[in-house]
Length: 179
Image (cartoon, rainbow, N blue to C red; front, top):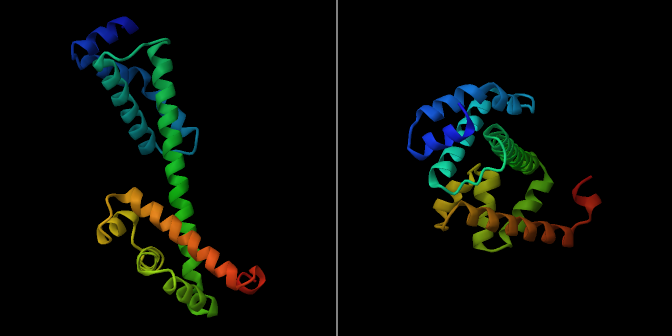
């Protein structure tokens, strides 16, 4: 099937074009993920999301195709996988950050952190306690604190952590606190 035929079928809502694209480019598109540290399941998810994004764009009539469909799908898949890797990296960094704070529970440094958190004000105290000590995720914190959304909770947590860092650094030298 030619690209123009595929686009015509999509415009008419003919899902056989979707099946055709899925089967024809499956291996090429999933290899993007597999060759970049992804699993087979992640590859399938990325390809399906990419194909759906292409379908929606083509069906809306807003698609101006300046390359072959395969090239366009490839770029969508690549961008989707990059976003997923970025998301995974952020989750990994948050987990490392969380572990870093939890290791202080059995020593004097833990007491310093708790004392400084207590001096930050009620909102920061609650957010940091929920996140670092109670193990809540951002969605749970947003709900518990009646924030508009998860992004608000993330922003507030970031600002509170910066305040905490500044407070600790103003009272203790790096050698005192991080020997």
